[in-house]
Length: 402
Image (cartoon, rainbow, N blue to C red; front, side):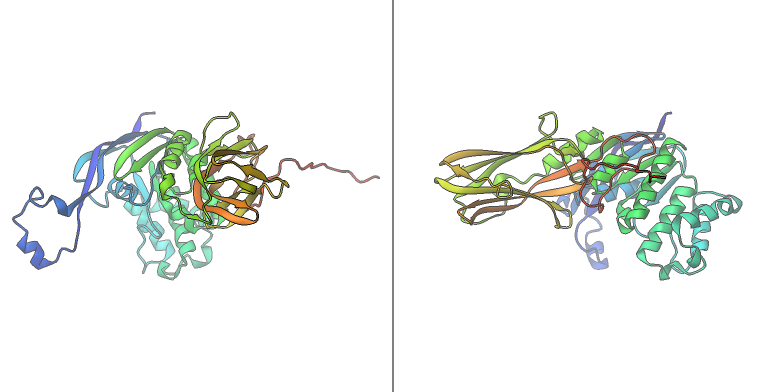
């Protein structure tokens, strides 16, 4: 279809520290070369292209440069160097209420945003009912948006951005504000907008399950630089593995008579992986270095959601198993015949006990992303907050005797 957006060697510098008038006047004649320590590069030579109708995921940890990139793309601020070429109108949803005037009503803000996008009032009026129905704010349409809750704000803001026909739609973490039902509506809308209407979407989220489900391709930013660009699964693998704590930096509790030395996850094909498909087998290999012989050893893995809530526990005590460790390396392999967790991001916690005492407890051992399986057209995908997945249940239609 051709490129809808092209970013070439884009950089953005910011000056650190408070700039008051006296300080500015005193340094007005000094160049950046004379004061290099006062500048920081939020973006450094980033280049990529996005095809028309493509959905691109943008990932990176806090401070990686994601927000700076989106502000440059949205023309909120200007780059220090490089250029941006776009084809078509662009709408941005970077934070709650982007582009809204707080003293205007919801209805007035819809028309204001349409005017900003270059649309005629008649065009906006044709889409008004659809926008209001999607956002679910019909009762508050003539109320100033400064009185809206954050959820109402983001619902209306997304509805406006998605329905006023921009060719390029940029969406930041704001979907995290909405409830699960609204998030699903947004994801479905973005899928139909890209596949059916040919809109180009740039989607930024720390929810890797969302990125995996929505974006065939992703880019990864680290310290203002582009570190990976390719299929989303590969970029997520890079992202997770790059964020694993070094063994020396793991936080450990217990007697520490044995310590976790290495850990690795394996997918259904026996390959090292950070992504596990729901319903597929997987395994976790933990290597412990014991400083002495240990008896009656119990090993456990805990799976926590991103809020720290324990979702799943695997413990040798549950299997009525205990082990003996010899001094030196001891390898434990934990195999799950099927991954039962819902698609989401998880953090692994490890425990090691001996004779009932905690030898070692390690939090944030590793990150894990569970992704949804391929579905037949028309069937609902599993999602978070639906409990634990079970594909062993039998569901039958029993017709009463007549």
